[in-house]
Image (cartoon, rainbow over all chains, first blue to last red; front, side):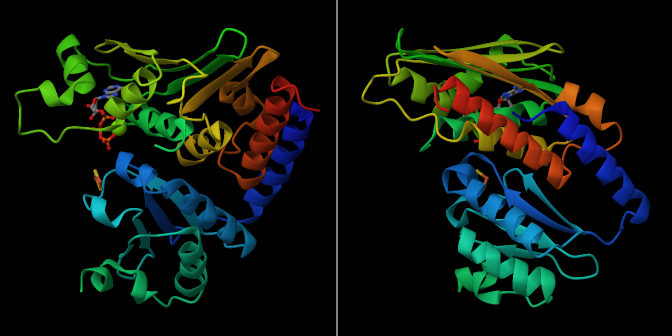
Length: 123
Length: 182
Ligand SMILES: Nc1ncnc2c1ncn2[C@@H]1O[C@H](COP(=O)(O)OP(=O)(O)OP(=O)(O)O)[C@@H](O)[C@H]1O
Ligand code: FES
Ligand SMILES: [Mg+2]
């Protein structure tokens, strides 16, 4: 069984890392729309796919979080990617597979995956 | 919703938006007595009686200026379609408790689904808020209380990847044991 002693060890390791690494003000943000309609459309596996792929790539300065209603139900699951100094990008009708591509192309290589963006979907 | 755990994620979001700093999610189930009860309690801003009525029955409201929410009505429907019941107790400035009770064996019962994943995501996305999760079955029960974890963790945040992994493993192991697995 998982024990609190194990959690203490995790704390000690994390504290050591915290001291080495300064908080980065340029952290990128991935916002997953998790209003009722987003959740119903499958936002949860999309959020999990972002978290897993970001961990797999070892990206340190990316936070994944939920956001409320973005106002475009018919395009859910919707994900916004914000990289400081770059334009915010809204991805629509997301899936876990698309999430993996967005991590690798957009977050790692700074190439927007334009075929998944709202601009392309409404054309 | 395909899983009740998704309703829980949705309705717990309301607690987050109500600026609660403690949210309790309780799942009590029994095959012997054929029920499953989900309780979501928060110490957020609360609602007036009139607001509660509007939230429960949005299509009865005469107001058309406000977008009606679907989160609570869907949760209510999921319970009532099994012959169960639904209740919201709320007090302005004190908090809100939402309870959905299901008849487990009913054909229209929605599976609980991955409730542990819901808890993990709630903690991950709201590391400043404390969550208590209690799950009980005929075989026993367990509790996850982030206030206890916080005591051990000190200034290390709950959304640290290794901490989240510990939480996921803790939930999985304990769930197995109350479902009578190894
Ligand atoms: N725990 C709570 N504390 C305070 N207010 C609440 C709570 N739960 C619901 N409410 C109020 O009831 C409203 C309706 O909730 P509901 O979940 O049905 O829809 P919503 O959150 O507005 O939209 P969505 O359809 O995206 O869920 C909320 O906007 C909020 O004002
Ligand atoms: S209710 Fe669907 S995007 Fe807001
Ligand atoms: Mg809601």
